[in-house]
Length: 391
Image (tube, rainbow, N blue to C red; front, side):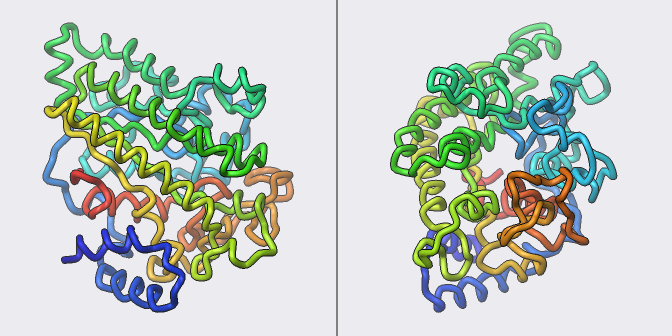
């Protein structure tokens, strides 16, 4: 019953009526012990499945230190506090105040946090997985953007296909034979994303192109994600999670960049920009359809869709029910303005400030989420209805 209610919420969250807000709050209240127990470790309930290793590909939402390993040239502040202040006490290369979703997933399965590939030294974590994600990575190759004279907007050239190439190169160090690798990978969980967000940030956020001009890019990005997933399955992956996009219309960076005097541009309940959230849902619909086709091609592989949108949209409709009393569309760390986001004074730069308690905020720095938000999302993905088929 609860599963059905949550799925309905994910499908109907765009309603503008106060009646829907009341329904949403009632349904979330029914789930309150599940979604708000931030003091309980994500691993306090062990999943039924047991994975012996995790391999991750993606961008800053799951990078645990690869970008930092190369010096973080386009975003040097990620190498310093306040990044990492909540849990680690120092900057680890994670674009948050603490843990990411991938950290909580690893914890839930009794595995250590994934070491970044570019810092890999063959240590004790070798058999429990590897993280190939890179801050700023795109689904499409860098050459695509250089051909469009958009190369200067890239934070890295280490796109999704580059990361898959690293994996193919690295896998030979794990097992000596193909048969042994396939046996090992069958007990592994592969996470392909979230990826694609930066492909949209370039034309939308950095260039300011209208959404209509960016929509034709979506099928290309979906194709790149499916190609990478296919390549991983061909290497022996049997359990693959492919996340969708998040509600970018709720990001302080977008809310600042596209401030409007037209009240109809904003959702009256959440304050998010409806058009950009609809764009995220368009991406997700195409991805879901592509994964259905991929499942038919690889019926023996467990290909799971992770609904990052559904797992996070509740934060914006009823933030206080999740403990987010500080704000849902205002960044904890930033340089001021109505959403505490200033491109001239980003989090960690001179002129920026940090909130007293990041756990009361959904957003960390304008483009990324807080550890508290990631924790709630992870619970919904691991134990709740937001991974299909279930994780």
